[in-house]
Length: 60
Image (cartoon, rainbow, N blue to C red; front, side, top):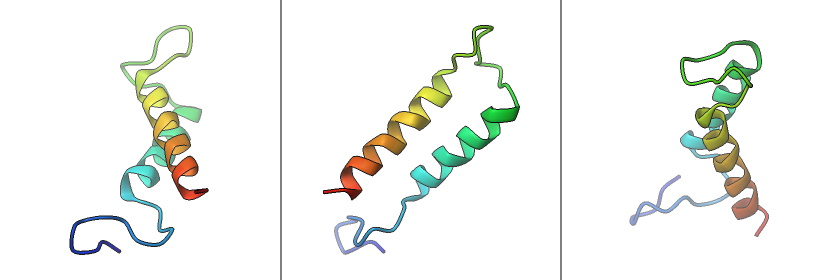
């Protein structure tokens, strides 16, 4: 739930974090055009960073 200034209230998982989890699930079995031959993908890196940031925020 958002308050009048748009801040997330409670410990509800934001849409961007849920989307990040979907990105990780997809990349577990499929590659995207941005994936390198070595297995690194900037999209996965951004998703992991977003999830870690949310976990740190939630634990405060």
